[in-house]
Image (cartoon, rainbow, N blue to C red; front, side, top):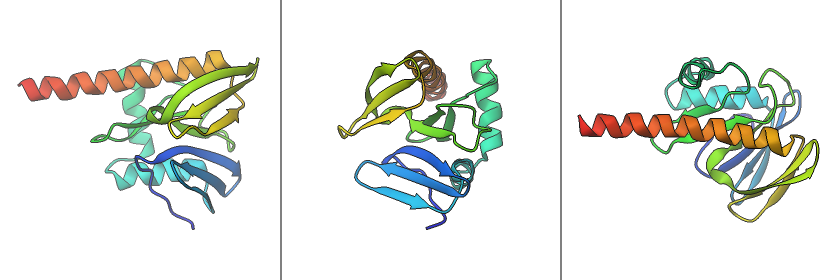
Length: 153
């Protein structure tokens, strides 16, 4: 498989090597022959934008410029955040709404428990993970406020 569109069941996009990515879904795992960045970009395009367009919007909405969460799709508010710089080949992306719990393993590792009970360890401190979740939640809040404001108009 080379192409993959992120959907509501996508929990994580995990870069394994250049040109190889593991997709973690609620009930399945896939290895695809594509870069994690490309999966993000193609999914954004599938839903009507581009990764760069979504990145620019997140920069403006959050007034921040690094490790930004990305709104992949609006109607179901699919927001993914990177666990390290999105410019790095080994960047992994996590679906904000797939997380049920996080736990510190050591200073540079955290365990994420997903909504289906699956636990995975990632190379990110709990403090950094908390910050990424905060940014993602802030982006989600801004989007919800705008949607609700339009409904009232």
